[in-house]
Length: 300
Image (cartoon, rainbow, N blue to C red):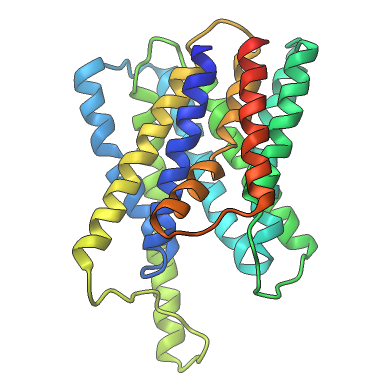
């Protein structure tokens, strides 16, 4: 039960962070928002280090770094996928791969799942697809490159869960700090490169160039949004790692990975509250299925 609660909490908080990151990305380049949020997330983790401690053992640092690199690559590939293909298709595809890859790894390791658990996991994956389904009026076409990029991005996100699962259970927040530092560095480099490329295109008179910097008014609100995004994203990682080590049950990994992929619920719910965006019937169906799947996982 505790594993399910922590997994759902992590997913919701992830979704809240993504919503805030999306808001900020309307005014500043998305990769810049991601880089700053990743750096900001180091601060609450350091505070957690003081409060609950952490052991920077070789295993904790190694697997934390693997998780950070995996997440950083996942973010960059997701941005690339959404830039070349329809969000309505590629975003759910990414979430599905993020959910399924750790499950397949767990099964390959010999983890046996009950019939109820299998049914609940399948329902949860369907829920991920339905909740992540968004309207897309861009007219972009699905291409093999876009599909492959989105799939690999999902594998990167699934790699975060796999890496955290490998961290020592007594390492505290140490792996999360290692992950966040490396992720901030990777995204920071990507943000700098992206900015230089955009400026070069602008200077050359490229009419399609977008410098991504539209910060003229409301800078304080924008800053607070990015700060909150970074803090919530770090908190979500805490929930996920805690959920992975909350039980010695071998089914914990697949349960957490699928629940973690339900993060679009947090995004669409907050969009409904803050932006008054209406959830579609498909998304409501996905939320209902997610609740049913969570109950099933708790009982399995």
